[in-house]
Figure 1 (cartoon, rainbow, N blue to C red):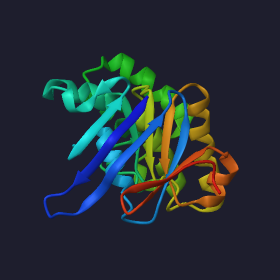
Figure 2 (figure 1 turned 90 degrees about the vertical axis):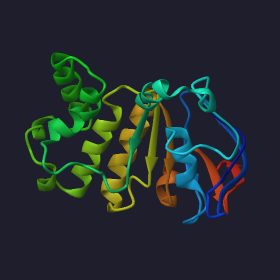
Figure 3 (figure 1 turned 180 degrees about the vertical axis):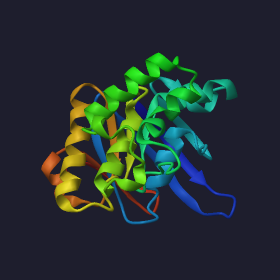
Length: 222
């Protein structure tokens, strides 16, 4: 589902964020991405989202070589990749419903279908009764669940999460991780960047570790 073939990423200032990284994440697999700040985790995810392009090598997602995508194909690719951010990136001038609906509105989905899919996503994360609320009135854990609902409302086959539990207490973190496991159990490929070793151990999934832009570990947590 996700393949990196000898991928390097060097920025214009000369900083090399990734160096000859090769890896594979299979369809329907759940994988954690670890490493210290600056190790290259965010860059790796940006390459999957096509927010960045590699300086060398190939990135393949869902059988598509991202380097060969034409500009008009990029929006379709991004609809295939749901993204959950640490700081939610919600719009506080809109309701919970409207935040989750935004990707569907951008994609031109019919309003009736938008309503059905938004409510299904909110129901999945346990927030159906909060659809009219402003996100600023919700707790941190609830805001993160709104972000998850928005990420999966397009039913993407790939779900990326960048430190999704970084600002949450252990109990809320566990609840959020259970949601990711549930999505994975229905076939979604899940890649989570995290430093939360206790949660990673509790899930028992495969771990990829980056150090100074290089892949240094691929397998079970040591």
